[in-house]
Image (cartoon, rainbow, N blue to C red):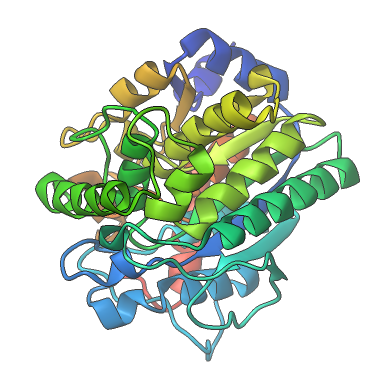
Length: 376
């Protein structure tokens, strides 16, 4: 391996051997990108997320991100990328890769509060209520999303069996629902998740999650020991989680899968394992990896690497750095803002596997930022 390749080779955490095998298997391979959009009222809690400067902004984040991911910069977007506390939307990274490599893109609506402005596959879901209610989704909705995920995962993989399936997400407040899902499934995840804030708001997240789990136990919708994963999603999950789990399970039976995200996709990985155990939904673990950014993997205010180790999950992290960017909104990533989202880390890994170095990706992202008129 040349020095240049080493400098852009993703780092492995958790199940390192499996992650390294996945990378080597798909080095040079093409991918297709499925981004699953969803909404949880958890994302409207003041201070819960920095993916939108205000709760009102966060209500439209997924709509705006999907529009940019699909079209790229437009002179008059219907929904411009929302203002952030600091930084720039991670959809810039994903769009740069989609555009640079002509990656086939599929947008899927697992449950949005507002209708998307770009073509989306409707999975028949609904937005989730706040995690604190202990009744985030109706169980029939969870079952419907699981089946839709299984159907579309198989369909997309079979359409391009020689390309691995990159699955991303856009759910504001999703690291909190990731914490609730992991905890509900029995994993000690408190203090280990990440957020879009430079310092993770662990106490706020835990207060919301513990309230929701307590209510679900009081209502009898969750069993105290070894709960059914479908019941956990219904109690304290979001619509993206179960849809992506179904997609990844079905697609991995045909081709490779890269779950593009950090904490949120580790939660999906845990859900896939639980669905296999409780419902016999088998999937070949060697074909599935989780891919994120080094900003997530190296976040000193979380412990994503430790969480991956607990789950025995192969976690890959792009070495992408914005330290040399001429734009402050990108350099903000190096101060801990934003970190991940809209499949950014997984898309960057896909670019590395096709030969792009850090400078190539940085240049492509800066070009998009300039064209979008957000170069600051």
